[in-house]
Image 1 (tube, protein in one colour):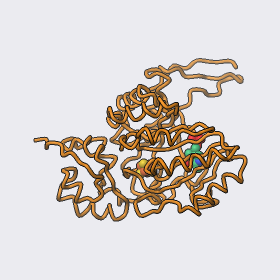
Image 2 (image 1 turned 135 degrees about the vertical axis):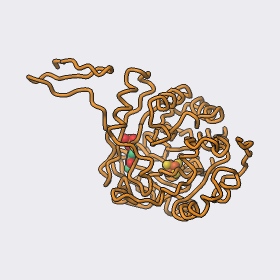
Image 3 (image 1 turned 90 degrees about the vertical axis):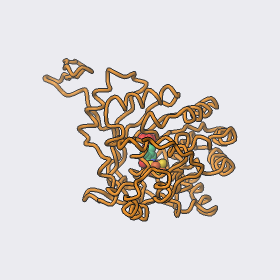
Image 4 (image 1 turned 90 degrees about the horizontal axis):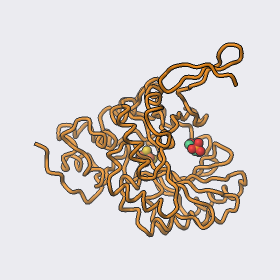
Length: 352
Ligand SMILES: *Cc1c(COP(=O)(O)O)cnc(C)c1O
Ligand code: SF4
């Protein structure tokens, strides 16, 4: 019998809370306690309510409910999978590309995704930047005129109060060479009630526009509340893009990806990136092969509006940056011509 959904009012942070809510089996508890000691756990009421505990393949549960397999570390996995560390000139700043920096004012998130690429860095115990550290991070940006874009990430910046966000965004707007502020967040999906009118006002820059990159992996996450939260942001003139992580058992089939990207576009959120899973510790059970990712992208091309097509990208381990990883449609042919593959898989010569 499906249980009656229990309306949660608080974020669930301990395996025992998850068991009490019927989201994990009591016999799994001791194994999950060990996982929770290693990697932070949090499931917001909105996400807890969405889980169907009778579905062993529930895509929401798979993303947020801890799993004993997280303690299985593969040799290729790393504590700093995308190599941020060497590009950290001051605390809270990652400066890998010349024209843009990451600014991480906070390391906590409203939920902890089980596949998080920064899982070694995020968690409730990791403190936000203190006022002196924030001053130093902003001074770094002010001192580097080549920085055109500041990407607020973390953690999830939207767990900060509207007052704090307004202060940070205001100070970034005071730096004349900063032309754009981008915010990476999962809040409109996992805790849409935080996106209040006050929050929306706080996010709008006086001068430099604010763009939001939403992290969303499955159409089921895009509830009516989530879509309304995105609507409030877009109505306020904040453009929205989405990044999606390719996750085995969650969204690694054509139908799920197509429906997810259409749902995002319908919410006025443009699918921008599809990420190959990073080599974070204990996330092997989520990763698909690059060959599978390319196969999925090929199947989407031609069958799904171009508006709904993200770029499939890999963050190269070791800090070498993010690059598109195909599939490719163009290859050198004979005599300096090209061979181009159409969406049906047929090849054609092209002189050019
Ligand atoms: C991903 C990332 C960015 C943003 O890259 P875009 O290609 O502009 O999305 C910037 N800095 C760092 C360190 C990153 O990892
Ligand atoms: S919201 Fe982002 S940073 Fe936070 S746990 Fe999920 S993937 Fe990690």
